[in-house]
Length: 425
Ligand SMILES: C[S@@+](CC[C@H](N)C(=O)[O-])C[C@H]1O[C@@H](n2cnc3c(N)ncnc32)[C@H](O)[C@@H]1O
Picture 1 (cartoon, rainbow, N blue to C red):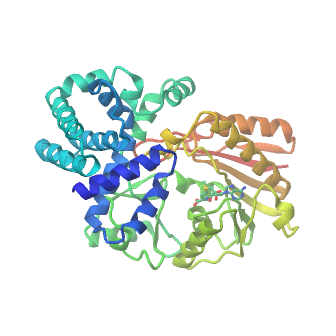
Picture 2 (spheres, helix red, strand yellow):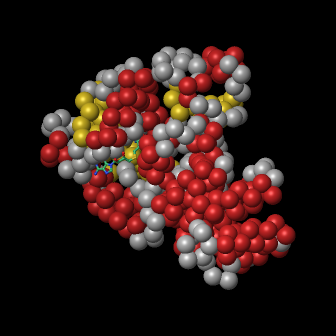
Picture 3 (cartoon, rainbow, N blue to C red):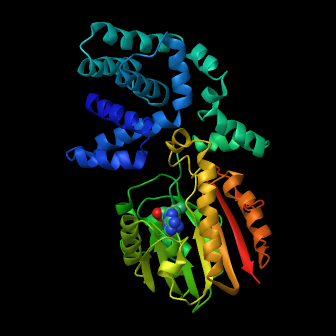
């Protein structure tokens, strides 16, 4: 346990210094190749947990400490131990003893080791008071940065509380059944035969009652099923692809939506992304699904002059890079890594991509603009500006009631997305 706490200290410290949690964990598994599955699970739990509740945990520490310890690793060890005290079932005395033992490997100072012991015991003694006091500040209550809370409140006065709470939940594991191979009822039965309970949530997504490793999913390697959030599963059907169409998936990696498009109809699909290593994931995904793209291109979607073959597309999916503010429950590091000023940078990039792709869409063609963001700068404000600049574009209404004004807000069943379908006159 001490080993897992110490590795989690290093993971959390790298993330809070600016690196992405996914990348840090990947590097961590390579560095510590002998970790057992259980140890990896514990490191993941500590790291995700601390980042999910960082606002609350750091407010509690601010009350307990007159000043933060100079050694940041001790501070992160305290965060991890507080997370365990609040959110794990381990006895409190075990958590404190392990934290003190872990502190001995980080410092020789008896004073600091004593501080770790005293802080955690003080927390146990005054838990209710400390929780209430931490919740007096919104950062402590919602565990999001203040600018994020203020922005959501201004944008969604009736929903911001629910969105912030949904962000702090553990995400569900949702499956997309490859209906070109098996129908949903039959796959649900296959799951049940293997002891896995699932329920159908809109539109045709199967949510597992308990997440499992992919290797346990019946027929996963044969492409019967993919793991994909229910909100993300809306994208491909919204593009309205028909047999024989020329379709572009312009920001395609890791290929979740490319695979779905190919499952829906026999189309000629061009898969494009500017990240070479992520395109390898698309290839692996399509191979598993036993689907073929017409071509896979590594290039910049904002510069078709470099890669486009001159034939217009009937359909384009523009699932553009964004703040990812709709997928915080899966990536809790995002809320601490993003700065409000990033939104403007994303918006410039998104406009460039959308404008370029519009030029290579056929007349009467459709383009689905998608983000996993809940901020209007990347979504409805950007589309409003685009419509002012392109008189040949009009919005096609979407018949999905959960999507309001293009926006699907995250909740406990799905992530947050923005979808706008543009029709070219
Ligand atoms: C939101 S992700 C796409 C997710 C993907 N559609 C799926 O469903 O699996 C955005 C992708 O855009 C790619 N990207 C970023 N800037 C790009 C650009 N200028 N041209 C092409 N791809 C870009 C990123 O590498 C990333 O893979």
